[in-house]
Length: 218
Image 1 (cartoon, rainbow, N blue to C red):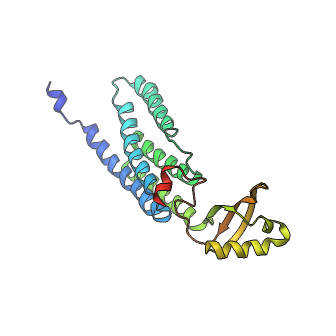
Image 2 (cartoon, rainbow, N blue to C red):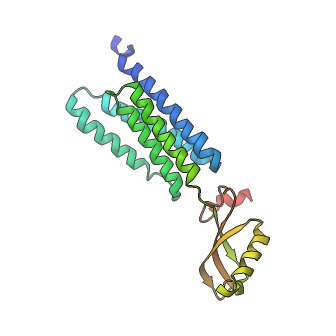
């Protein structure tokens, strides 16, 4: 009975690794992702996924008694839970957000299973990942895009492209860099345009369409 209330040495080591994991994932989520995208719904998802995955993997691997179970069943169930949760979403996640989710999950797994790795090596591994993300965000900048349902269909022809760009800049209030023409509705004189422009994107710009619930905020 007394064993139920004991704190083992493995628990102390787990908490140290958990703090390291949480700090580095917070830096990735708050300082690298959220500061640029301002999408609070993914902030919560990334952070809670990091916490849940860390404990899931740690207890699946170290919570078993026999070594064989640790290497086979623990890792198998842990990885199954990790990759299953990535499909637990109602809407398609953009590529950038999916990449951040994969990085957060990967770091949580690495910090949870690296029991034979020193704290120095763990810190260096986390630092390298953070540095790689920072470098990519700094030097691989991409211009945001908008999907625009356009009504002046006579301007979508190649010879009137300058007029189209000028009209979009006037009506959208942004510097247009590129315009791609998608589907065209001849019956209603409407065309779907993908407009690439200078500036920072907001949450709506990164969505392909608005859900019914989103319309209540406009």
